[in-house]
Length: 317
Ligand SMILES: [Zn+2]
Image 1 (cartoon, rainbow, N blue to C red):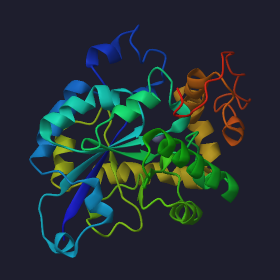
Image 2: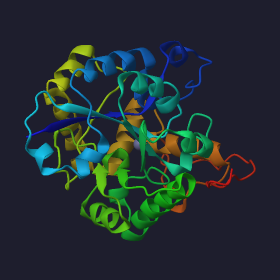
Image 3: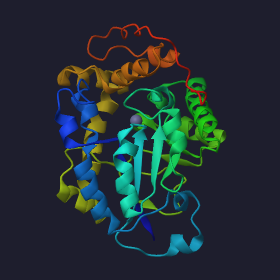
Image 4: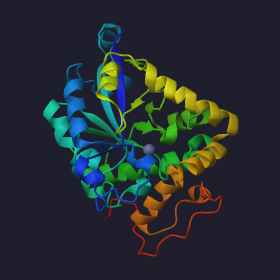
């Protein structure tokens, strides 16, 4: 059985810029910053991963029988980037090109236009041979906590926005925060998403990904030795971390767990930070269901949006 190790990155940024108090990431919380991998580490990781061989995303959901039957060891590698950070193109792009890899870039459409994220023009200029573009909702919500109508709106609107910008069909979806259930799968399928990328930590059997594509998140703190174990197909540590965190999340419920975690870490909560970034992108209120998210630390609603001329999320600017 041919297997695939699917890596989940977010932002990529030079080490000097990450650490600078005046750098582009200054002011972001530790939890968001922890998902920014340095350009130097990303280069090293891609050089290591190239030894395994790359998997093109098109092979995952449309594998010919021969490919599915072929045995390969170690697993081939597929690189993905969530959210649509500019660094996932500006910094990671040249490295992918150097190694002949093709990545999948999942874009949260509510963040398009923020200085730290890709603009419509930047998305249009991306070479198709280097990136496949997928959806990552409008407002980065916990989808499994929404009702069916809200799930549909998040998935449909973001797909339409990206198709409008790019002029081609969007077939892949990455589920924000790993929040997925049977309704999310069903609605995504009905809307035409053919490949659903999750946060489940596991290798994938090429050609058998109907139940979703598992991924392992690469963080700034991921040690080189751990990354090498992943390349050998050993995901033990990463899987245990996620399973351990899932226990209090299940016992307390998603929202309560996030409030507790935010209090302990002294942060506002990743989702609320994402909403702040969206306000910075558009100067308008976040979408209705996202605006209902209460401040994780204080239990009060998020502050009103900064006033700035509204910029529509469309291909027209
Ligand atoms: Zn995300």
